[in-house]
Amino acid sequence: SEIPKVVERGVPLPALSTDVFKENIFLGKVVFCTGGGSGICKAITKSMMQHGANAIIIGRNLERLEASASELSSSTGKKCIAAQADVRQPQQLKEASQKAIDEFGRIDFVICGAAGNFLAPISGLSENAFRTVIEIDTIGTFNTVKATLPYIRTTRGSYIHMTATIQYKGTPFQAHASAAKAAIDTFSSALAVEEGPRGIRSNVIAPGPILNTVGMERLTSTLPGFSEKISTSIPLQRQGVTQDIANAAVFLFSDAAIWVTGQIFIVDGGARHTMIDF
Ligand code: HXC
Image 1 (cartoon, helix red, strand yellow):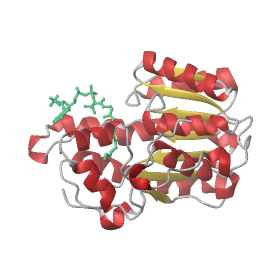
Image 2 (cartoon, rainbow, N blue to C red):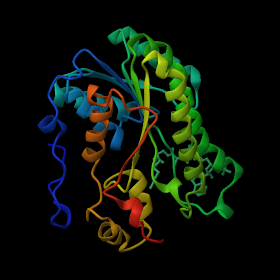
Image 3 (cartoon, rainbow, N blue to C red):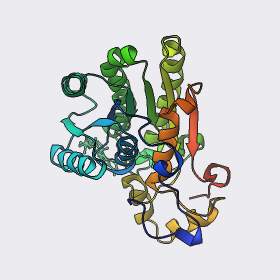
Image 4 (cartoon, helix red, strand yellow):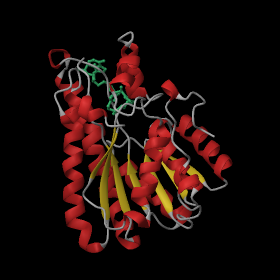
């Protein structure tokens, strides 16, 4: 199991999605996941594969992607391939989509997960620094949708966009990422409305603090004791693990969520209601 052995603060960790949802619900389906080489998006891809899907993971670091693809294939018995693309480059995403079609013949589920972030005050952000995060997160999402939509229309497929909860209040040192994620939240609603009549769904997952992710490690490593403070402030008394988000994605992609679109699914143990001050 990928679930960390630690039961944080005595609070139970999530079940595997295969313990809750039927196996093979995604048999014959294909997942296209940007940012799937690591972290939350790799965990989502793995769960989708455990339910029968094949997958293509997309990112900048081909070596890491290929290692992840082969690990995902061997641990699930399904096929995962890698495609190198920077989501800021539309042509590279078109090539990645074509690679998915050449290999699998279809794309059913798209996860727009590639993101870039760092902690910096507005006074310390250059114009290029702000633009870089907008380009990776927001324009990268747009580029991913543009590259995949023709195929998603043929399968009546579904999108999940990964955002965060930092954009729901003023989060210091995160102006760039907050602006980028807020734009994705609203872009997803427009996509849901435009493509809904074609049977295409578009939803957002907004994860709260998730352990062992680049974003949280950057945040908590600079502030001693911060991680523990976050855990105790969360109503459900622990930080998330990647499986919490993977389970949410399995539900949203499944036929159980067939009438769910244009939603922002906040998965955060209730953290948004009690978020501590920095
Ligand atoms: C101020 C910074 C900075 C920092 C980079 N820059 N780091 N400014 N403080 N700590 C500036 C650079 O000086 C440069 O501006 C501009 O940003 C672009 O930097 P590059 O390194 O040239 O960009 P690039 O190589 O494209 O890398 C993009 C990156 C990088 C975002 C800076 O960190 C990255 O690739 N990250 C990918 C992985 C990642 O961050 N994952 C976390 C996602 S977490 P100048 O003016 O000097 O040219 C997430 C969840 C959010 O999204 C919620 C968290 C709680």
